[in-house]
Length: 423
Image 1 (cartoon, one colour):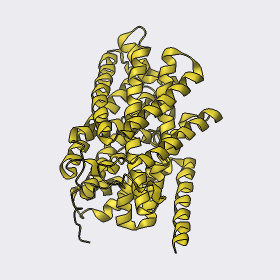
Image 2 (cartoon, rainbow, N blue to C red):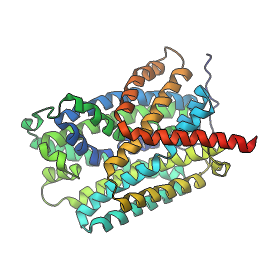
Image 3 (cartoon, rainbow, N blue to C red):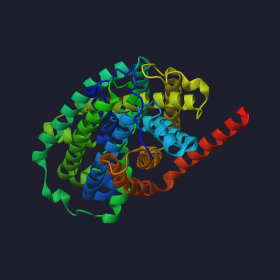
Image 4 (cartoon, one colour):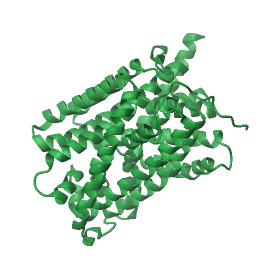
């Protein structure tokens, strides 16, 4: 198969630095404020192996999507790659899995951040609900103003986030105790697999920026640079925070609802609830900001390509703001939040529902890369090395795969009905 590069897209305004910040916000996000504790609960200190596995996988995975984005910059992102490799049905499935995973993911993210605020000010469920709603409103308003503002906001956030996390790790590590690493695998090494599936939430994000590749000034140059910088920063921070959580907090890490707060408390002493709440809000806003931007662009592209109603298509061109698609994403996120608060659904379930969908996107995206990228190129080998791991993580999602299966069925049904109406 002869491979050609897509025609360069004009109209984009994102720089490499802003792209790096969007990546850091999308991937680092809320995983670092909640997932170290959940992983420790699932596998004990052996959860560090799950973190290491996913850090190692993230490099070739990110490189794969960067190579695809550089060659084919389009708002459809992974959906576009699936269309080019396997046709419109695969594109619709990928697009729907991503688009309809963002609302429950946004609800979970908002609740993670809101829990830290509640820990600082009290107020119970009411504080959590109000904070989560305000986060969603702020993210929607930022993206309504356009991706250029979102990129500038993200650049400022990324610097603050990295500084806070480095401070927490460096000041808490002197309190580490080797005894906290034993027994290393209290639930057996078999628990590492489920822990890795849970932690996939922390590494979802490498595909999110593919929907914004057309917004870069020079996708072919800036996207690989942004990706490489983000891989190094995110991988180092995740491993450092995960190790500090286990080595410093010990068995208490598994019972903590705010592990980052515990680290700050050990590092600084005294009442640091306000500082930690501020850090949690920055992390949450950064992740939601990147995902709202990516989902809004994707929805417009799906409307353009016939996988969603035509009404959503406005804003799919680089430089335009997809406000209709953004409104749908925001509306569904508010509904997901209301349903979660109303039913008492735990965030653990929301995380696995979301990661099941995104892992499905990864599997199809990597498979598309194997068909679209030049054979025996570095990016092609990166995709080949990643495919087996993402398939393993997909299986480890377990019963929560029912959500992407249902979304897949709905996407195929929509295409069938749309074809009948238009024929």
